Length: 611
Image (cartoon, rainbow, N blue to C red; front, side):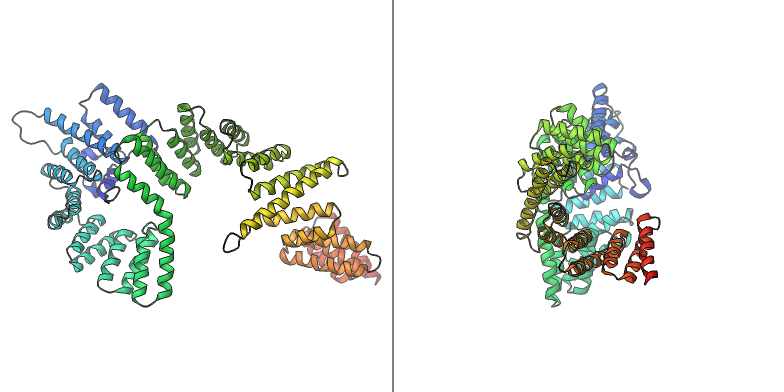
């Protein structure tokens, strides 16, 4: 399969930036670069202008460039051909050539790029040759022609035109890289290495050049050099997973089997992760219809979005919109990507456009909810998330956002309903059960502690929290290595608190110990000291247990004043006033204005003075 977007098509898009000193392009290419966020508006505007006057070739050229940018190659071919036809029709009789500033050479060059995108290389060659006839001093037209020859395995002809391109511009890394590839195809390794090194000298992070250099070194059995080149290639471009495969082979050649296994395992992992993207790109390469290409581009955008590559997601979604400006899915996707890039105004506009096209599109409301949530506009976020679930009751992510907003706002009753809705949709959601238990616990605390309602809420909280534990542990055993969910320690702590409130010391102690949090040991210290006060037979044993727990809490987190205060109280009850004094002074060092700690120090000092 040919590359999705030939370098020269890609460069052509960059060229719109008008770097004439670097790219030496005709004046027709000199325009401001199309902003990805304005693609659909640009296309609409250009078409409107052409509807008024279809002979405006400068506008048609701009439209064609946008088509190339969004990979609408068939549409670009048509636009360029129209530019050429109009120019030919308006030629002055008796004049054999067109001036260098004409739109024609630019149109032929763009036509060649469009044919390249369609893999119609013979047509591309003809177009590039026409462009060169008008502007023989364009390095990039010669280089593009060389690329087309190389794609048809005409390496001698490719080499000839690449040499012309280098003579015209010796400081372009891609031209050196491409001619290096042609030399490699011809078996001329020395020349190939020289040009790849020149490309790297011009652009040290040029991953493709490093990778090709690695292949050349490997062919010469220069394994250490090959390993360094492959590593550099992958570091600069992690999508070049072939670097990892060849790196593994190079390590095998030098006898480092452990390193070879490590790189091969990483290759298999990265290849599997990139397979969905490669499949989409392959489908896009085979597809010509605008609607189908728009859908595939949207799917590629979603891939990048899920993988956190938001800039690329924006680019692919905007290409999709350029192909189909009625795609609500693409507007929704690009809106989410803009949100993650903190381009909130663009994000809201995109989601609103989706709703303009489809008012009942739940995901667009959810997208607005996300944009407002990340701006801390909670009521607006809540409103749109609720509209989303009203339109699509099974939209789990919207329910989750509603629940967390309500929980953070301490609206525990409403949050309870939200978590029950989540559990109805996903019965094995351990975190939802944890948060449901938290909501019940807060409601119990707000109730009269002796009321039937409070008791029922505590029981409901325990049921939910213990369900969260059961689901978490069953999930952990299915995963290697064993990794507990981050909320589980807090779940155990809450169970400990609730069991303690019920007077069940044994169950509370077990839960606190399972938590392992510093505050859990602190709670155990207080609980053990309380129980020790009731033990008339051997109160010292209970205090020793309380002391160990208090010391553990301080050890785990030495920056909490209340932990030292509890330690001081236990030491005081044990009669060790010196240790009590040290502990209370540490509490005061952390909170010097705390009146309780100040009073505690006075009481301890009095005991020490009496002794």
